[in-house]
Length: 272
DNA sequence: CGTAGCGCCTGCCGGC
DNA sequence: TGCCGGCAGGCGCTAC
Image 1 (cartoon, rainbow, N blue to C red):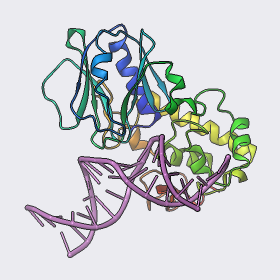
Image 2 (cartoon, protein in one colour):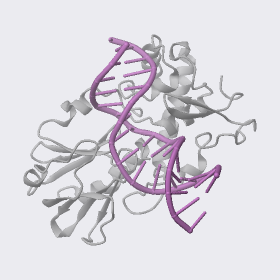
Image 3 (cartoon, chains in turn red, orange, blue):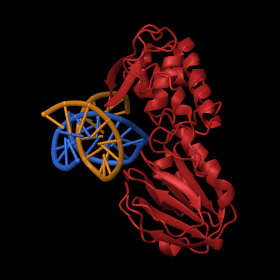
């Protein structure tokens, strides 16, 4: 399941292949994603030149030189890959962007929770992007910012750091991990966190995300980076997926609860 | 307004 | 062995 580091890894992987490329045509095999892929793409995209590939939260932005952009989300199981082979099309290869010299950007998504959308104007004003909170790795995502926003929140801290309007890009895996390393119980009321705890939490979120990006992202079950090389960060997870196993720090048994329909694992000793 | 809960979808895993 | 129920999860949407 791609989280921010995987999305960033994907962006970095595809960017050098796409910049200054001209779109030849598009192939839509399965338009039914979270929102349908409009067949208008087949008319709009040909002849456009790619200006840049960017990330905002977990959205991948493919910017064209004529101001429009593709907004791509990988959902739960999506993957983008670069290839030059037209054939061997997989069951879940829903969308191809075909460039000159037969270079293909292929969108695969078994669970179809993702999307491929076109925005003709400034992508930041698109409804999906316009209300997003700060990037977790930007300086604006600071201890003071988190403390001020969280001090009135009755929800628990895990939900809070997973809310895109508070901060983008933190999914279930990294929420679990960051709270463990910050020593904060996931079901603590958000408003109960001290400035000091916010400082620690911010620091751990940034550290873990940066580390994961450095390692090329988590693979877990269904992610391959665009060049086909799987990352191995999943082997180093401290709590996620480790229910009933000993805590790596204190060896006591990790506990589990469901928060907001999401599995949550924590150490009752190391987190308080 | 803030918060809780829903549903999209397929692959995988455990139980019988 | 095969079937089936349950689970996994990002996140926008609806309902309170």
